[in-house]
Image 1: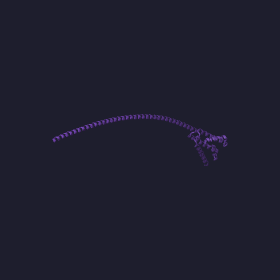
Image 2 (image 1 turned 120 degrees about the vertical axis):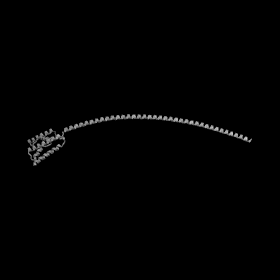
Image 3 (image 1 turned 90 degrees about the horizontal axis):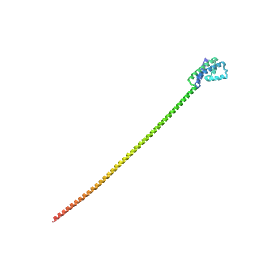
Image 4 (image 1 turned 90 degrees about the vertical axis):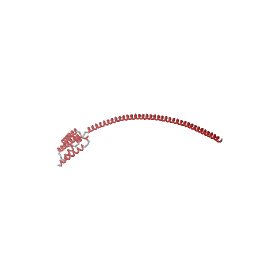
Length: 249
């Protein structure tokens, strides 16, 4: 029971180690070909360990380091730990082989879910190329829009200048017409005023002439009345003197 618990604990530790290693960047995950090579390399490593035991040369240590780095699992250390907890060499090799197969299988499945560094870099380059093309299209569109806006602005400016010139011409024309009409009206009113003034002078002269004639007629009538009165008085005086002489005789 204790040995089974120790095996379960080691399997759990191996799984946790692989999970922590797999949680790194996607660039650290190998492709399917690398997984297959790692599986074969682990089998070769176990066979070498079986044949030669723990007396490994410098070359074998290098291969162990390479396989361990590729598999993310130290098979030799794991097998030794199995042996330390009381397993035999064959059992340790079987457990190590089983764990290696599990790790490689999980690694292949995870490799299918993640992309490689080369694919990621290629996708990044493609996206950068698309972004650069989009920026170029946007810049070109902005230049075309700006040129069109400049042409429209220039056309509107010319239209406004032309309209301003036409309005100024019409205003000047209307002002000149109004000034001409005003001058004509002033001349007509001046002529009418002069005609009224002449007519008034003529009537005044006529009234003066008639007044003088009337005065002359009144003076003449007054003189005639005086003469008639004097003649009547003289006639009455003569008649009275005649009557007085007759009465005296």
